[in-house]
Image 1 (cartoon, rainbow, N blue to C red):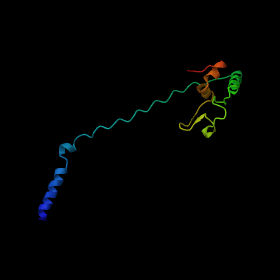
Image 2: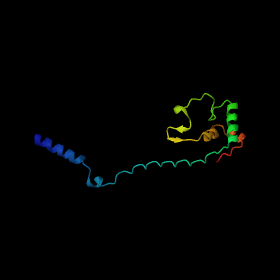
Image 3: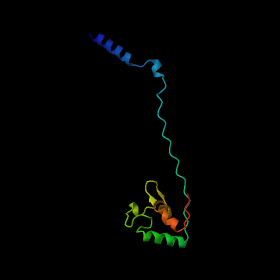
Length: 114
């Protein structure tokens, strides 16, 4: 009876093996790697003269805002909002003011690049 059992096991194992046609089939297509977004273009730095700087700082102070255009008393991780810890890049203070309070720069005739 053992030789019969051995024969059944061998036939079962042979039936489970892929045929030569299946073994040479190309692998299924894999999903393409997602395209990386292109980095944002560098914005031109905002230039202020001494008179414009004083004007914007007075505007921010008069509206109860901190030096970056956020409400006074705002807490920042790392102590300053000019450093982005996720990218490792620094941002100019005036770029933050332009983002948060563009009207402060406009009221002092500061040219803001597009």
